[in-house]
Length: 114
Image (cartoon, rainbow, N blue to C red; front, side):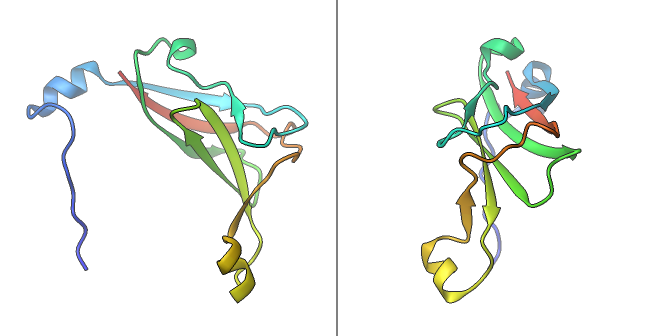
């Protein structure tokens, strides 16, 4: 099955590009990751009007974690795999890493906004 793409924003590509802001930030979590995610990446603290997306791009990311940015709550959350079995698939393969200590390694994110 082919992918379906839906262009967003102005019909003139240069118009969006002239307003697009890009930031690369290293985020260091504290020693006790909160359930639901940690606040920190917001439009206000990056000099943007709106954040369009946040993507983990590496750096020194802790091995085994997947990061997700929640736009509505402006929270970053970490997940880890519990393996692939019939039981874990039914429960969800990725589990929130609540209470994990990720304070020793910064995680690098690419932030796109306007």
